[in-house]
Length: 382
Image 1 (tube, rainbow, N blue to C red):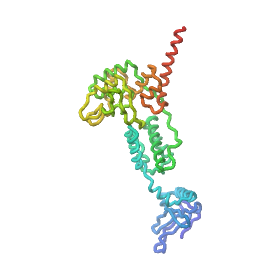
Image 2: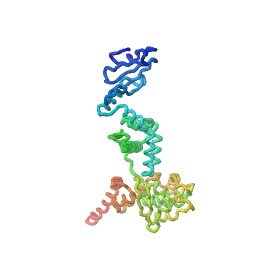
Image 3: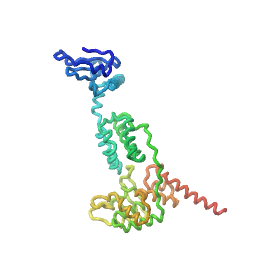
Image 4: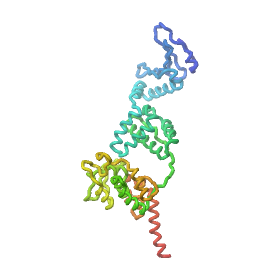
């Protein structure tokens, strides 16, 4: 049997194959540095690292991997992990079996999506992020093998392609994903824990003026797609999220109580929305198609209107309003309320914000309103 006092790549490569016709099928050498680590050499010359140990009086072994595919340093690191398992009272063979049973990231995505479909309207956005950005990088890794460094590299590589805000949304999705894995006891800690998000450029929300809103509402009624025009009008007059309006159903509209029931919102909760007269009129006057459950049906009446972005841009052009996002309808609804004297609490309830922190973005508008009110005193005594 060959021996070597020091393990180096060159020394292990020079080890001869086990003799043909010998009683045993291989020979082993022991790492002088790491207890339990062996290198087994077969008759073909292939060499495999093994970790040998005693557990509850029984001599056992775990194969680590082939020399060449694994470096000496990697083999030693694996042996030390097995030693740590032993020191904690565990059996490395059991731990290895648990690792084999550990799902891949792409496999656990199915568990996550099953959960997301029950709690999030925007679950399809999550699926797109997994498909486009996450799975191509870490999809084939086992959950327990994903490290904070893997997450940092994944997000870092996206900096040239995506805006910081979008990267932060992917970061947030990964955090929720791995926290779910922790709650399912698949892993002990999320690799996203303690990782900071990127600083985002603070883009100002676009607030349309009352005059601009009037022009948009008028143009919406003249658009070639009446359903899309009415849906856009509903967005402005309710401040609801796009999917909340587009997925509203006839059965959820209560004309007597002037309210719209939302069975599932972005935060997973249901709620009733109080409708003003103008919004109620839009909901009532949108043409109803027999057999379609949707207030704003798409080309296929059995499906809701998809994304009326093209109609939105047509309407802005007719109204003479500079291009802005459809989501700015929601910001505009809130700004009009605050400037008219509504409290932030009232705005929070109408917008359906789960936390008042989200509504605080409109606090500066409230301050302007209060300042104007305070100015009344100055005018009186001037």
